Image 1: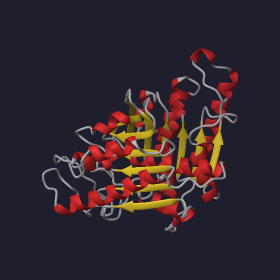
Image 2: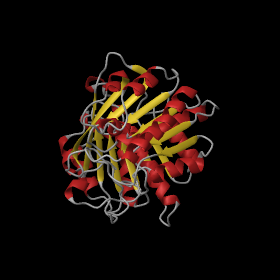
Image 3: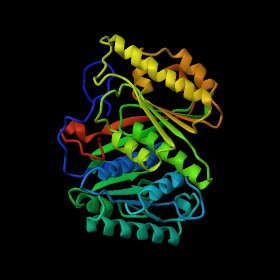
Image 4: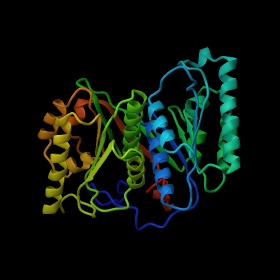
Length: 377
């Protein structure tokens, strides 16, 4: 997890030493940028991964508003990959029509479908059968007035103590943001020279690495639907120890798709502060980049996740120029996802076709709330 320490610098810390919170939190991911539904799927994967190795099985409901059958969506492949790997743990419900519409185009069908989805959500939350309930695209549903914001807020405030709620979509109403324990806004940044298949997630908010994990799921699921093997490489810098946010999720991915997922990490098991870099930090950063450079040139991977590359460059552990050149030369059909916060924006940001700045409006860790296994670490 990205460090919340106020000391100057950029660093990553483990959550291993923290005690576990028992109360489920309400997460809101909104904004016009990309990554909201991906972040929710990353949290789902992490929750399931931790449940595999514990005596508490994680069961998940994916309730997708405004995503009726008949039209493909970015998350379809990711959800198919999840359901194939964990068919007894994932339930999915889709509601709405398979087309975009505005406030002037709302029909009786839209209201009925929104209410149908919300009735299912209420029953699922009250049943206590699900440890994670994802309300995908409920934010625009509320923004369009298809459901009562007051009723939704009251229901979520009365949820079972241990249930985690994740609400996604642009246009989250203020009343929902007010009761959220975590609120990350994805803000799009546009570049004129964007390279197809290069995505950057940066900023201080939660959702960067989890969005990248959602992309890994998408790649695997897309390959399954096409009867192809889409290999994924997850390469992490500044994470040489254990107990990191993504460990359980990556473990789950490798368990169900061992021939499709490769994982490498580098760095010391310590926070690296600006001005306090050690020789080993440079050696480990370069080792990771050599792996990344070879993977980019090989064409063997459909998706390559360069997790925490941004703070590695910001700490001047790696030069920018070789990274820019490697990204310019990557195969057209290889997707690259680069994550991590940074103070000084690297020049390769200008090459991104998708760039989301994840802005932190609220995070329960800043309020003294303990972190929870399977969701935060």
